[in-house]
Amino acid sequence: MKPVTKIKSKSLVLPLDDIDTDQIIPARFLTTISKEGLGKNLFYDWRFNSKGSPIKTFVLNQDESAGCEVLVSGRNFGCGSSREHAPWALLDYGIKAVISTEIADIFFNNSLKNGFIPIRIDEESHHWLLSNPGVDILIDINELSIDIEGFKKLDFYMDPFSKYCLLNGIDQLGFIMNHKNEIDNFEKKL
Image 1: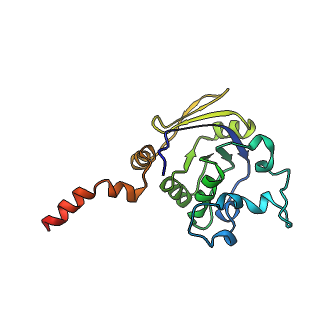
Image 2 (image 1 turned 90 degrees about the vertical axis):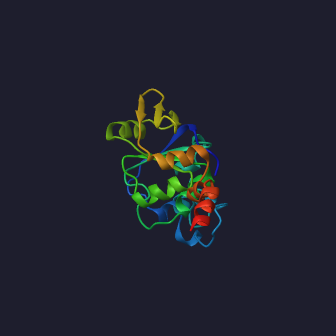
Image 3 (image 1 turned 60 degrees about the horizontal axis):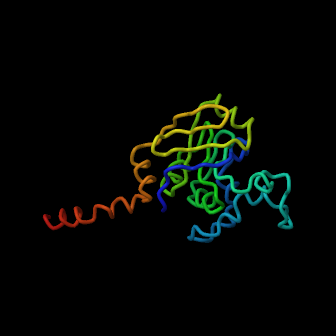
């Protein structure tokens, strides 16, 4: 993983509630154990018609969405079955964070373990973001803040261990491996 300190992007708004992991990455694309290439199937059944052609009205297929790294979704994002492929697909597509009032717990934790940033915010701020697509957003992991152009600066919560891992570009295994010498010394004492 690369360290994540700040994300600066225009917002991409998908104002749907209850977006489950099978909508994020349909089950038929889960035959891989690699994180690479999953982005092309992100929201596949919403992005493409039955012939595989892009649906022009879907937000990810519109020109103004190109390069957006922050997704603002309706409530209850990432619900459904627990599949780590969902944050993998979002990251592989280029989306680095999701903002909502509610994010499913398992998806939330899987995201943090993989370097994807799930952010829960209050109803008023969420409503404003849904109503104002394409605004500039700066997410600061060190400060745990979101600076929203034309609105205000918000604080958000992240547990200290996840914050440490993101800022240092490591996952749980990387954290453990950083203490390998201490672990080896402890085992020698047994």
